[in-house]
Length: 123
Image (cartoon, rainbow, N blue to C red; front, top):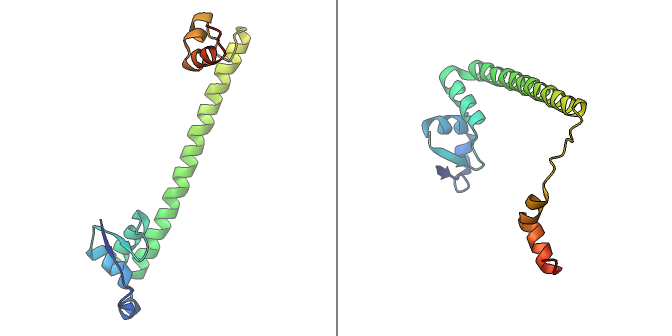
């Protein structure tokens, strides 16, 4: 990753689409007065290859993809919630506790319990 600063030559930033063209021409550039993220690099590539219309199209595609991704993630989460609810209902119907119960031996070998026993002289 490379960085480039325009502080010593602010006139260069007055050039039309300077940032976009520099981002595309230097693929390993990671910082140009502020971080360059994947989204900005994608839009810059679209601008350089097809102009403002291509950049606008890339922005719209990005928004659409992000919206679809959020919908998909929410559907997966809702599905997981429904699955967990079924497991809880099944456990309740069988009379099982939803909390895992430890045997006396497991409790006595838990590191935090051993420490407490030593501190309070229970051992």
